[in-house]
Image (tube, rainbow, N blue to C red; front, side, top):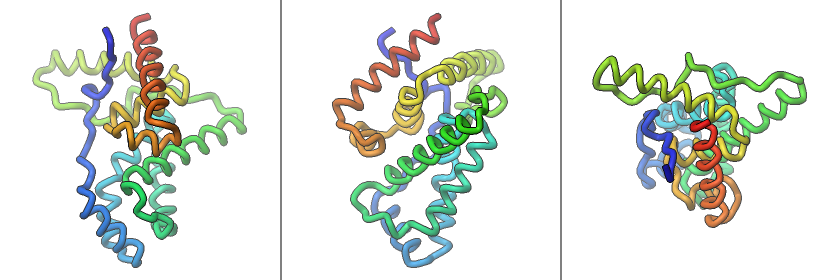
Length: 198
């Protein structure tokens, strides 16, 4: 098995906004338009939560991060300078917030949370009860494997496989070259495959 894909087990949610619509909403937010911010929140709230949940494995922490991110956005969206897609900039903010939460939890000597079976990402529609059971079993295996991965591996798999970021977007979010992105993704998939198969 050359490639373990985790994407089919989870819905990606709504597609990202087209660049012109996204840019217009961001500009309006920068001018203080609360309706534009509401539109951005509706578009990205599930994505933000799912990334946070994937990284933290805890629904309460993920909700806190999502709320924190959107509050921060409203106050600081003027920092966005249109050098990248807004969604790429937003992913970087979310992942950095998650890493801060993980650091805070380590300082407070809390045990790392496992990904909870009761709070999965939104499942793909299933055709029958039998396939629903199979999908739930596959998701449980995947969640346990993801929870055991190194942070860097879990992060890149979530952004690539579940959020469908391109190599260029991953390079920007993770702050490394496209070549390093590809090699880290290969390593992460290999590590995940080993955990799933053992």
